[in-house]
Length: 137
Image (cartoon, helix red, strand yellow):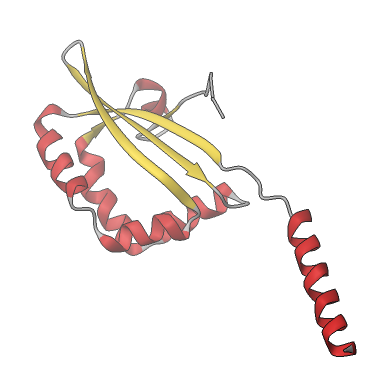
């Protein structure tokens, strides 16, 4: 009987502790960049069959619900990327991703397809950060 009570106590403590550990909601990030018309088909083909190792690295870096959308505006193509980050150190996870050899190879294929907006180009980057103005829970 004492063993059962001890086990029940441990179970109760575990349940209570689990309830006290609040899960932080994901951080949402979005970016925009241009897409070179002459490279658009190749970019779409790459993303129609993404490399499994790259997808694994993205997930290992605490990224979920990652999507890239395309839109033509005034004859120019643009890409909009959105993701949710569930980790604790975004910069460290992005460095981890950038250090991955398969991801580096992937970027060597995708980067030439993209046309940075002026603000990103001035910083030597491809994607321009966006500011969230609305979120519905």
